[in-house]
Length: 432
Image (cartoon, rainbow, N blue to C red; front, side):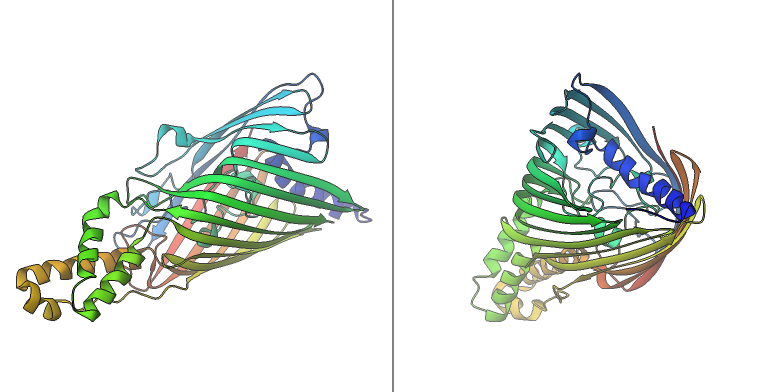
C-alpha cells in the first residue's frame, strides 16, 4: 500500500507499531518473523502504573474486570496497575515455547497458578499454519492478543461494559492459518478447551468447559474485520449455596402452585450445573492516516442465567505524540428483573409462621443474588494519550457511567438501585 503524503505515512506507521509491538510481545509474530534457524531465548515485559478516583454510591466497588475485587475507596492505585513478564524460547523457526506471568490484583479464589497467564508450545509447520497447545489467549475478541498490555491500545483500559465479563485465557489448544490474497491478510482459527470466570464475592470460580470456537478475520489497508463464535458449557460451583438449593427444591414440590412455580424459577436463576452458552462477536478496527476507530459487539446467551448484549465504539485522532479520544460502551441483560415473591401469607397456614418467614428470607436472598448479577450499564469516556517515549505512554481518562435498575453486576457491594458514577484515571503504560 503506497502513501503519497509522507507525514500521514509517518503517523500511521508510528501508531500502527503499537498493535504490532503488542502482537510481537504476545509471541504471535508470523513464522517468517520468528527466530532464525538457530533459535534462542527472548525476554520482554510490559506494565501499567495507574491511579483512579471514583465517585459512586457509598459502598460500591469499581473494578476493571469481573475477576477483580472492587475498590470502594475514592482513590485507588491497583485497578489498572499490573506487571507482565514473558519468555519466548525458539527452537529454530518452527517450534517455540511461551510463558507469560502477570502480577495484578485478583479475586479471593485466585490461586498462585492464575498468575501464569500464558504457557504454551507453538508449532509452525510452514509460514501459514500455527498450532498452539497449553494455556493460550482466548482469541474471541479484538483485544485478545494484548488485553493486559496497556501500551497496545489507546484508552486507559478496555471498555468494562464488554471486556469486564470475558475470560482472558484458554486451557486447551488452537490451530490457526493465515494467508495473503493480494493486499488482504486473512486469518482463521479453531480453538477448544476450558477457562474460568467468576465473581470475587465468591471463593470458587465458575468453569467454562467444553469450549469450541472459531474466528475469522480480514485485514486490508489498515481496516480489520473479524468475527468469532463459540459454544461452551458453564459449570457454576454451588457448594456454598447447596442448603438454599435444597430448600427451594423442597418448596417446589409443595401443593401450592404459585410457590412451587416460583421456587423452581428461583432455583434455575440461581444457577445450575451445565448451562450451555452461545457466544457471538463482531469487531471492526481501522487505522486511517491520523484517525483510529474501533467498534465491537458481543452477544452471550446463557439463559436462564444471563442473556447479555454488549457494544462499544471508540475513536481517536493522532496529533503528533498526542491522541485525544472518545468512547461509548453499553451492556444490556435480556433476562428480566426477578421480583421478590410474597410467600409469607401463602406458606404460614401450611408450614407455620416461623418456617414461612424463613422461606421468605431465603427467597429475598436468592432474588438479591440473581438481580445482583444483572448488568444494565452505559458509559461515555473521554481522554488523552501522550506517547512521551517510544515505549511508554501517559493516559488521562474520564468516564461517566449510568447504571439501570438491578443492573449493577459490574460493581461489588452495589445496592442494585439506578445510579450514576464517575471515574477519573491517570495511567502510565510501558513495554521493555
